[in-house]
Length: 615
Image (cartoon, rainbow, N blue to C red; front, side, top):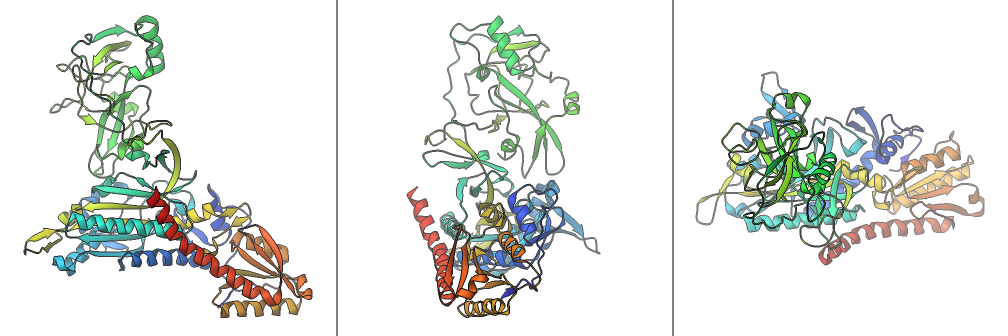
């Protein structure tokens, strides 16, 4: 049945919603696809559900092609499985907690690894049952501290999550690759530019992971790429570690007065003026900056740490938090506050250093109560530094790593900057922003061990199953498609994703115009083409045209004054073209156009795989 504007549950809006920052948020609201119910929570209207359904259908088809079977879990889940896996604490404040009338703990599921694992444990017991891949398309809930940008970062969202179960690592590798291919095909069919990049597993754990990034300035993720094809989330970039340097002939460390030098810039100026080098001038890269940070662990514990890095670099807090070096689960990392520093008077602001030698090192000695000290990987054994002497107005010169100080470990915390070398030697890095629309993980045995998922192997021995997890943000994908395909006047969906294949506008008051529009609608629907018919009697053509541009169906047929000459106007909004076509021919031509668009979208999947293989 055709959608009719005269009865369709939609009201377009002239004004942007309050607080809308990005095009998808503005236009999906104004065109009547979604309505805000609460911060980060949206009601879906008929037009929105039509597009969402088409996106879900493509995702489901690619999951089926990859051999995955669909199931469906509740959104409300008992807390016990998440306690056993450790994620009751690991998710921290992002987890929605609630109790039932019997005082039992429940959660609104942020993700479903635990219950998928328990379902397979309940039903399968032999290696003969594996490999297995199952998935769902389900609503998830996370208590985002700052929901923003409409569907791009909400508290309630729809995600496709799939899980693979294999008897060994070779099986996991095969399952992972099948899902990787499915994702590349799905995003290509959706017409969404997508780049798979190396990532860090974070609280999910596992041995390997990739994110699928939609490159866009509205994205919150920073990723890097090189001319030679390297691509990674900025958190996953690894530094090229220099060779260690012999330090037997290095001068002894010495403390110098450096008054009024609390910044790297002022320190470098003072060092060049009062303690010049013989070979070259001092630079910020010769200084060891020691940054005091506060780590908030999932259980709420607050820990003060110090990160040491070359002075020409700044700490990227998100990158440092995502390395996994700061603790189990997702941690929050922020610059230490004045209160934090007051609790540690040994840290002299602007003049912090690890100490003069290993015997009186201030930071990072394992087994003591001193603060944890983590170093940038570039600070290798034998490198010489200027750094704080832990006294106001004084710095240590020629402090040698490995000889005079050590650390509790290394951490990739320094900001990645334009021109840094790619870790694989494929050229200088460029930085870009993007939206994470999917991520795939080799989970390994983390959740299977926590929940005791075992099967009998070929020798009758109980063996822990190895797992993969594969998430795809369905509602976020829809927002990204809206970001990619729109104009100043409204949305502009790819033909195969639009809420209807054709938008017919009856642009006139005569009965002949209304009848011709109705006839054309019936003929197109008989050919399997879906139609949105603007049959409103008391609405001006100009208002109808404005609504059509907002709603964003790319093929628009205007039945108006040209009908007297046996013609209608056809608008191809994707190509920004208009033409007049005979009424007798327009149905056949439109059917051919729509079917060709669907076929082109399907063919894009094979093209995407070929291009990826070539790279």
